[in-house]
Image (cartoon, rainbow, N blue to C red; front, side):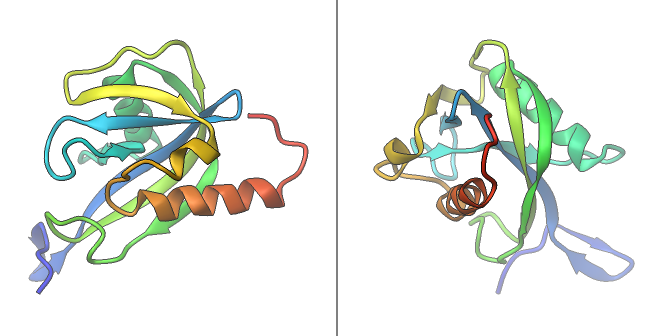
Length: 149
């Protein structure tokens, strides 16, 4: 049975998270996780939505906290809701495509952060369902021509 995080009006509900495919000069930003789950794996930048904030506000905050970058949200990539996507419990993630602005400053929660070309990412151990998210981004990027990010 999948663990839910809280109960609302008698209903068990999943947690809400955000992720971002942060792009800069045709590269994607990944962080190397310093904590479980998936310690030592590479992941997109993301985290949980706090009460009182929009998902857009949450992803701007998470990127700033984790890697020190400001971002411009370009578009919604998708919603990822598989009950098995996070070993801690049922987490639904809203994923955005965003342009990164500035230089990386690694926060306390991560081991390192780096921009990668798509072909470099295929060889990396990725956390959660982030290989699927990156694959969806690649498909979207190929379907939208003449977009420089």
